[in-house]
Image 1 (cartoon, rainbow, N blue to C red):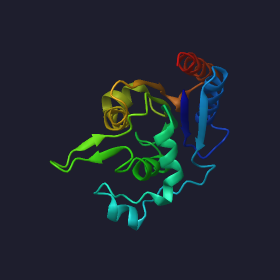
Image 2: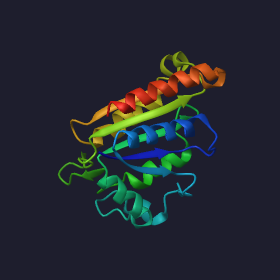
Image 3: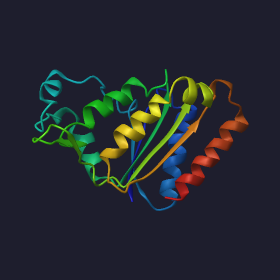
Image 4: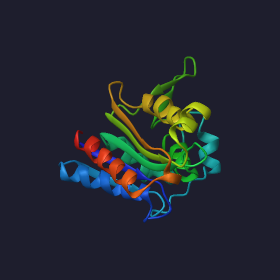
Length: 196
């Protein structure tokens, strides 16, 4: 498979960046083609342009400013996102990538009959998330309602192929993590990626 792995963390010495490297290394070791996309190192501009917003509510969305990212998304067989959850959500840069790249004509098509969205990323047969949270699992899932997971698995994944495989791996409690807990999670990630 050809898989895009998108990383969104400002620090290359972060745990999330180590997860990004582990995902890429495991995929390559198992013979997959990898498109490594490190949004911070690439200087991705997350703010939607005026022209993008003016054209967003039609199938004539002007994605010319992010054309390279759109082409990658249309060509890959799988997508894995590696990022931390901040304030129970994805970082602003990753949200901007979603807003700008997953636009009309790419991730979905507006149905002219009733205006609903029709999924359009039929090429993506794998949708994965490798993430971390500062808070414990019960705060994220019980208290905060797991908003980040819902956006990804209920909002984005349904725009992929109908039978797309998916996984969601999260390291909770990063604020109190230990070298042992981080190493155990890295091993878990490597095992799951090796099954692709």
